[in-house]
Amino acid sequence: MMLYFHERILGSLIGDDTFALPFWNWDTPEGMFIPDMYMNGSFLDSQRERSHLPPQVADINFDYVERGLDTEDQIKANVAFMYHQMVSGAKKTELFMGCPYKTGENGFCDGPGTIELAPHNALHTWVGNAQNPEYEHLGAFYSAAKDPVFYAHHSNIDRLWDVWRGFSGNKDINDPDWLESYFYFYDENSQNIRIKIRDVLDKTKLRYSYEQVDNLWLNARPKPSVPPKIARHILKMRDIQNKLQSPNQISSPDFGPEGHTLDTTLRVRVPRPKTHRTKKEKDDQEEVLVIYGIEVKKDLYVKFDVFVNAVDETTIGPEFREFAGTFVNMRSGVRIVMNKNDVVTKKKTILKLGISELLEDLEADEDESIWVTLVPRGGTCINTTVDGVRIEYMQ
Figure 1 (tube, helix red, strand yellow):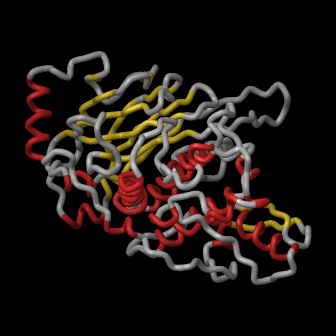
Figure 2 (cartoon, helix red, strand yellow):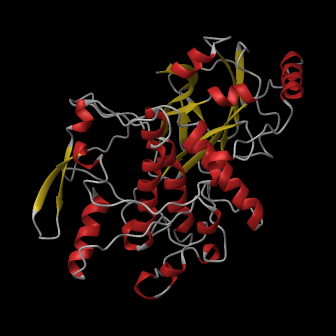
Figure 3 (cartoon, one colour):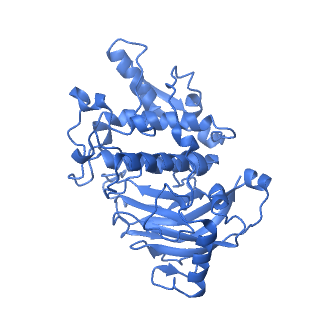
């Protein structure tokens, strides 16, 4: 909606009813740099991280730490990450779109979808200026739209939604509570317009389409970092010999009412309710790894990665099959309250990661349990707790 009205207003201002917003296709190798047009004139923003300007390749899974990869390796990592966020980790609507809001006091939920967390949140921070307290402009919600590249960034998010909808079996949320939700925007005639979600699900009605680009990540299915049989043997030997019995290894996947602080890497063995599922059962129900009760104590950037059956999570990332997903909390930079003395409460978040394909590739789909590792990134999780980890199945 925001992009639609923004585009219409710009077209009206320049007297061109055919004006179309560009999108920054940072998911393809040719587009993994801040576009040239946003490096000149009024499109240039002074508050971008200088070390990330062209010819630096974007890190679309940025975690406050420079990975130091060369151009070719960073592109490979980005492409592998896109495969996970768009394909293997997004096989069900809720995994891609996030949990649907419901009407009523208890209708709120906080469970973002795959590309909302990253590349969306992560790339906001990568572009923002690290010298500013909240990585302004693009790195904070309150200031992000001051950088003109904000609109090209979001246009690509919108495009990827359209690409995802084109995959076999994928469909939008059909809950009436979602479809009937509405927002108010000013149009190009300065008229305040009420518009429902159902009004913007058909892009032909919005009078736009997207230039076709090659989505190389469609065929970028990653491989395990260690052959699965060897990895299974190592993990079993560690278990038998109690080599994992350390302060950062938890015996139960339910961490109790106080949760567990993610100030260091956390490993836990998680039982699987169903094993030996048939292909039809896997097609009908995605196996989902759920990290629940995520609480960010302060308005901070937080990022942690999740791995399954990783022998050495310190040397691998999204380019390997053990990578199950990532959680990213972007700073707001402002406190939103109705009245001056209102108390601000932050509800706990949930992270759901589709792992059916991952388990097949790790040859773990018949195992009774899996090892799950949560890895805090960039020292960002010292004020973050997690209540536990479990496995569910999603239609």
